[in-house]
Image 1 (spheres, rainbow, N blue to C red):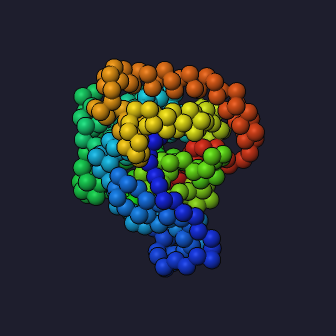
Image 2 (image 1 turned 90 degrees about the vertical axis):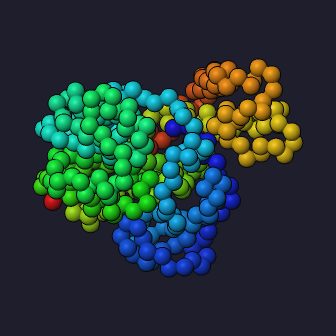
Image 3 (image 1 turned 180 degrees about the horizontal axis):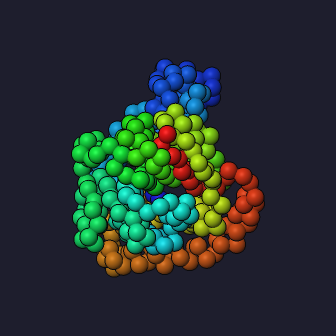
Length: 343
């Protein structure tokens, strides 16, 4: 995913740096090391990121969920993969579970639950964004937008045969509470499916900007996720780091070698010195202060799309070389897929 979540003031710490005792959100251990700080200007918040020496999870303090307003400022809208092309969904169906009742937490536009419904499942969606849920409902699929705790309290214990968390856990301020509620909603032997960014994935240009709070509150290795689920009453039956996709490297290189240089040039050319220095791609695309034909937002989006496509073509050979150099490394896939049964 190419993202322009803006960050500044990131500082790495050595193990010698002093840090206050804090409790890990995944295992409650208090043996913690401060890793770095991160200031997010959209939330106007300084975050501290800690690595738990007990379970290996990296988590932030504070952890307060942000709403749609933050995402509209910090994260650009991007073309989504068609559900049929989404590797996360394909892995779910490869489990060959008997079709039953499935709850998709963070259902978004409903791509997965639409596929599940067509495959014989009774699918229910949940998402914090009422606009997305309204679109899902238009297709005749049950979906809900409410407080997560209130939603869970309204559902029967053991109501679902499967619960899916496709790239949800890392966004959750309290992962243990999410796992607890998911376990309650599952019938005995029911399946929990979790996907998230693999903390062991290659990062040739450093950590991606979207992998900082308040977008991601936690970071997980395969071992950390397995241990977490086992502590929360699940038995892991399948876990794998996806094969590294060529598109992963291409998107990273497009961001670092294409989008960011173009953004810096656009700021110098289109704005007065010092103006909009911190502006993101999203904010520039929405600005009404641009001159001439560039005042047309639709034209700007088309021009940016053409530029990004051209940059991807030019960078494809280099991305291919990076991809081949990492492809044979175990547990290095960018997506971590885990299926676990309720014990």
